[in-house]
Length: 113
Image 1 (cartoon, rainbow, N blue to C red):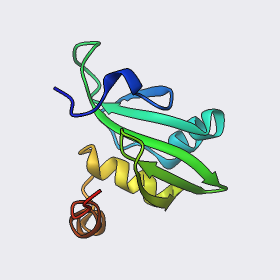
Image 2: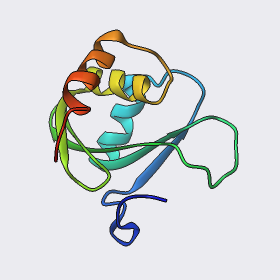
Image 3: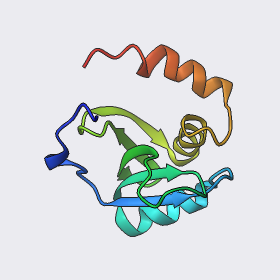
Image 4: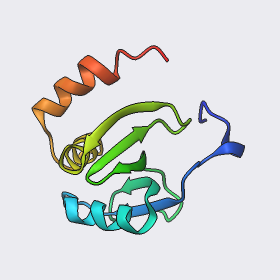
């Protein structure tokens, strides 16, 4: 069960990427240029149509700068497109990145809000 209020979610439109491959930054840029704020759901290519995935709540802050929020709308950090793409691919298991692992362990995982 989710630990948040489903009646208030998602705050941005859900856009789903079903892929087993690394997601290129131009694909994320294309989604964000069209919608400016999205809840990106990254899932494996095959599976039940109503399966879950990895959710990233993203809003465009300025050119090539994006805010990442929790599903509850709490600000996490601001990323360039390349760093955001690296985080999405790392967190969704598409491509391991040691620097992003270190960042997540030392910054995101220790948050208290």
